[in-house]
Image 1 (cartoon, rainbow, N blue to C red):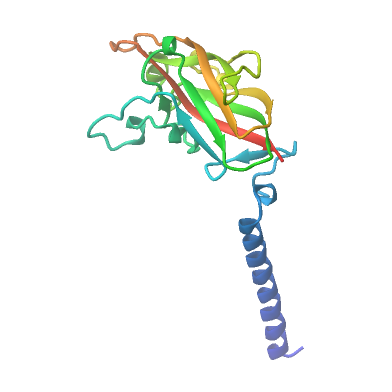
Image 2: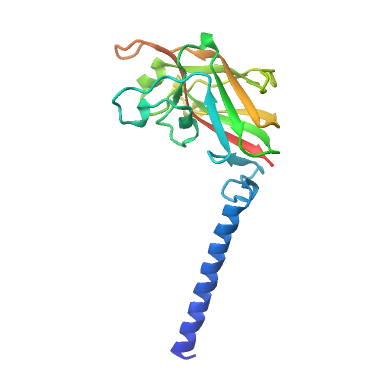
Length: 210
């Protein structure tokens, strides 16, 4: 085989592979989330991201003035940024029963489960213990009707890696899911700093079935 023929065959193969990759990427980008192959898990659920959901809070602790770091911003956007070093914080204690509302931006899907990382899981053990962590939560519909029995979350301040995340079954088909925090693991004084009553959650992952 001549060098020129071999070169042409090589170019054709490279062109075909490149075209297939471009076509796949465009196809995935333009299709519904059900066709986003990187979301699909072995149990036929799909992890939703910030293109699919919006989370709002009944209250949010104000950001620290003059602070440039993510740990000084307590927005509910931190719940879906895939970073445990950032967290949402309520503005007040559990006595005010803070709530989070998950709004689905797609129709006709069922929330299968939530995976919740309670507390401030940025690697600072004292910061984790000082702040309150959700202990009992319940799920509500848009009209504040309870749709499940209360669920108890594991305490991430226990020092056991298995307690960093709690998987909570949901099985709810609607565009709105509200999470009410009924009880907490209270914060404790640590390293000379007073315990903080605000409730913190580092991350929430939402898994759905289409």
